[in-house]
Amino acid sequence: MKPLVISLGFNGYQWIYARNVKTQQSYCDRNGFDYVMVSRPRFTNMLMECAWLKIPLIIAALEAGRPWVLFLDSDVEVKLNAPSFLSNEVEGRDLYLANGFSGRVNSGVIMVRRSERVISLLSQMYSNAMNPIPAEDDVGWGENGHVIHYTRTYEGLQILEPRWNNNVSPNLDDYFRHYSAGPMRKFYKFTLFEKVVYRMAKKYNRYSTANILSFNESMDILMLAVGNAYPEAFPKRFNSITGRSMSV
Image: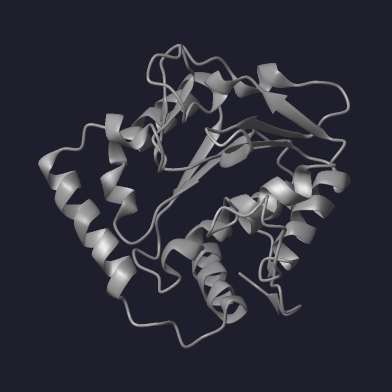
């Protein structure tokens, strides 16, 4: 099976960063990788916490037999000079991350080589999504804090050069330019349409009615919808935090 590259965007973010998504698709076409942009359902009541979805998606792809999986946030632009991410392979390492502007690993770009060890790590990370982590690892929301925490002592981790996930400097000769919240966001030149959608998305996230379902229940619903929308990319069934198996 070919390596799989995954991105995701809901609640308008699939349109805000559509230009970046095109660079991701072109990168995959140049290198012979399969690519899936997960943008269905179009909207989810998970709001910003839907970023957690990347972890079970990576697990599902690995369990389906993908030898490598690359996850890219939708706000990651792939440069034309970017080589195959497979060039980073190091013997004995199966998880590849770069440090972000905070000096800690950033989960906007995740490279994974299939192994039982890394699947176990990601599963542990996801199963503890609602459990607290030390303050020094916390980033305030989403999955990045758990990625920081659970990879601190992971022997299979390889730290990448910043050019593979540059959310620090506009002057870096980078491969993957990440316009995440922080110093790089201001350098993304939003079109008028993107600005409007971006403001609407922020308001939606701020004022949306509080989710009456638990995180586990909401993720089950979202994963089921994604599995039904993208059966070729994620043919395996998801196992939820709560332990329920869900056929997709």
